[in-house]
Image (cartoon, rainbow, N blue to C red):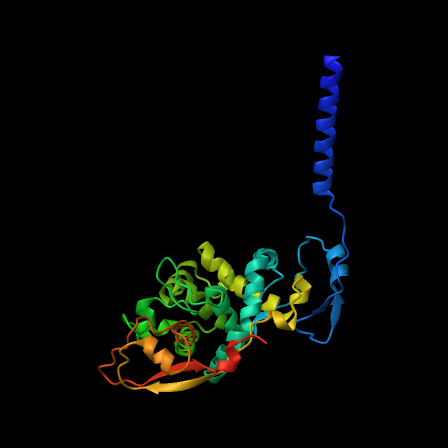
Length: 323
């Protein structure tokens, strides 16, 4: 009798455990509501989200037969070049969080970067260099490279950026973009191609020059470089592909998913500011928002002994709030 009761008890516990596991792994399927999803590059074309979810497969993305960087051909007919490019396409396709965030941020920051590149004669493809350098945030690397364009302190000063305890223009998107343009023009003049100019942005002009001479080569694609620089151009190219045809890589974002540009007005300052918190309040915003739109202001004060004129952005109040 005891064995019978013991067996019945174990059977009951086992049945309960089995029911729990089955229920956990087989939840009642609920139909998702129909959703309109619009392609970034075809805003008037909609797809069925339910169909996409049911047909989703993890597969290697298609690789185009021909691509260019700044109008310069990429030799994808060479197996080693093609495989390096494919690696970066796969990484960015399946690194969903980083890629989606970049797509979202691009609509706020590319409209600032693009006209500056155009004004200085720099190909539009270089906006993707900023994207891979910083993920379009004011990042600081372990080595101290700072801002969207990741300038080191020495190179930032060399290209005209003010850097001190109170002001760091590596965080000033417009001025840092101009500095990056000037660097890239110098590098293009030195090396002759935009591809090598871009590679030097990672390795430095002297580093690229040394390897060209050492290996007796003339192009980026024929050089043996350290892994970071070797991947650098392909990371830019992969980002370009992702942005130009996101649906081909499985990214579907609605119009509301993208970060909206925020309009700002300009306040010119040619004197000291004793407290930026008070300055923010006088202009109808918080200290937090003042620093968001002017991250180059690095302290609570602006001691402007030289009476230099600074341009401080103040956002329009109506643009701060989401409708």
